[in-house]
Length: 72
Image (cartoon, rainbow, N blue to C red; front, top):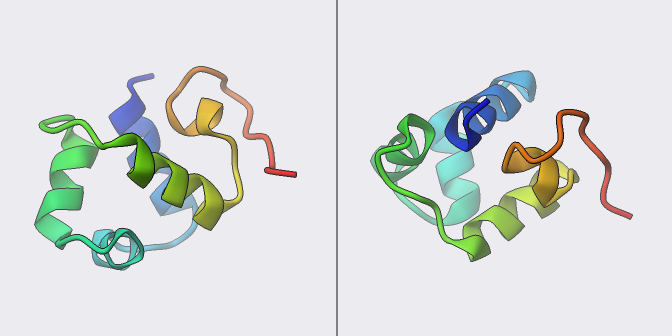
């Protein structure tokens, strides 16, 4: 699975819109849409923000592992 597909899946699993996640990241919805499509790579600070928001590991968000792990 590509990392950008994982972004969409996590968002949808949490019943959130792109606009809601974009607000968490302090960006426009159109920019977040580019991340989910893989058109632009997200910076590490944005990944960290998402990991904290969703309370899951960066390894899962980026597609390195397939089972989500909670942040301790």
